[in-house]
Amino acid sequence: MALLEVVAVEKHFGGLPAVGGVSFTVDEGEIVALVGPNGAGKSTLLKAIGGMQTATSGTVRFDGVDITKFEPHQARHVGVAMVLQTPRPFETMTVRENAVVGAMFGGARISERDAVRRADEMLEFVELAERRDEPVGALNLHEQRFLEIARQLASQPRLVLLDEVMAGLNDSELEASVEMVRRARAELGVTVIWVEHVMKAVMSLAERILVLNFGELIADGEPQEVMRQPDVVTAYLGETHHEGAA
Ligand SMILES: Nc1ncnc2c1ncn2[C@@H]1O[C@H](COP(=O)(O)OP(=O)(O)OP(=O)(O)O)[C@@H](O)[C@H]1O
Ligand SMILES: [Mg+2]
Image 1 (cartoon, rainbow, N blue to C red):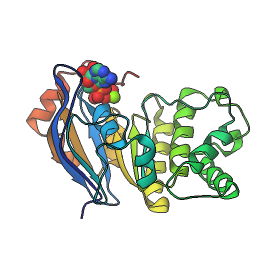
Image 2 (image 1 turned 180 degrees about the vertical axis):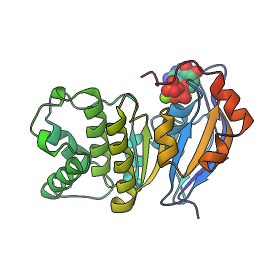
Image 3 (image 1 turned 90 degrees about the vertical axis):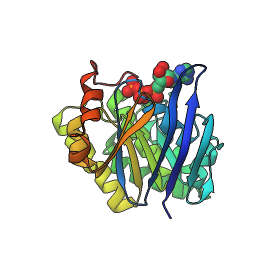
């Protein structure tokens, strides 16, 4: 059985569908990139899986459980964590306190001592351990994104949804991030669906690419093959702006 099953998911905000009847499955251990032009519906689809938006119709199943109508905390409880395009850390807390909150509100019951240990491990994982006693406000946007990854990983998810966590990184930061996602799978056993505009990162990390265009899934397959598909090329040629807006 697939870990995640998305069946005919639609999301409307009034008029035109932002996501128009998308179906796919993801197996445990996959690293899947979700790409497509600005406004294609990538964030909306990810939020419908993570519980931040409720699909207008269709079904989302995680490990056989219907999570279509789940709130974010319920999704986290069954093992689905999401890193939003714009992180919203608890501003008055330190880096470490933010990560501890993530660890406390995962699936399993966890003692405070274990939560702190788990939080510290995940801060180490994203290379923010040395900053742990600083206020969140001392981190730049990229670091705040990585804190958010640590916070979500601290909840011990099985599926992690990442929305443009690599936007605006330089080459060496990009390589480090790609390596971090690989290690998250290898060492923490997570499955990853990851929205990304940075094609260099997509081509080096993804084993499978899903392409959304105007809310429709137009391709699903091996990266080199997918990016040669004529309708995918056309969708990208129509795009003028690559770094995602917040
Ligand atoms: N909360 C909302 N209310 C109304 N319309 C929305 C809302 N969220 C998204 N939309 C619309 O749904 C469509 C898809 O938006 P979405 O943010 O999912 O695209 P995206 O692929 O993530 O784009 P980007 O690459 O710019 O982040 C857009 O037309 C957008 O304006
Ligand atoms: Mg988006």
